[in-house]
Length: 135
Image 1 (spheres, rainbow, N blue to C red):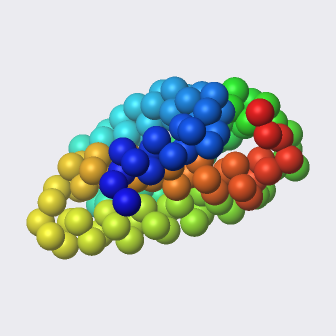
Image 2: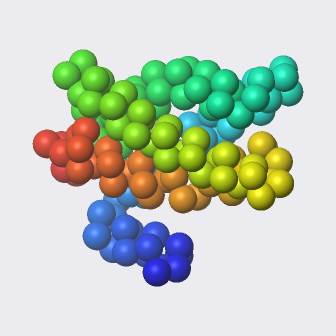
C-alpha cells in the first residue's frame, strides 16, 4: 500500500488524534533531527548519534506526545513509552544502516526514514503505551 494511502487510512480511522500526533511529531522531529545533525557534525557515527538523539528526545517526546496527543503523561506510562522507543530505535537503526550500506549519507538516510517512522510510532504508542486514553 502506498504511503499516502496508509496516511489517509490513519486519518480516516483516528482523525483528530492522528492530526495532533503529526503536528506534535513535526515539532519533535525538528528537535530530534537537529540534535542528530549536530551530533553527526560533531563526528559521531550513525549508531552513537542516533542513540544519543533518542536518549534526549524521548524525554521531550513523552511530555509532548503524552500530554498533547493522548492526554496522558502519567509516570505509569513512561516505562512502556521507553520500551516502545527501544523498538522504534531498533527499526530506525536497522533501516538507517541499510540505507547507508547503499551509499546514502547518514543525514539523508535518516531524513528518508522519518516519514515511515511517524505512522509506526503513532500505532505503537496508541495501541501499546496510551491504549486507555482514546481521544
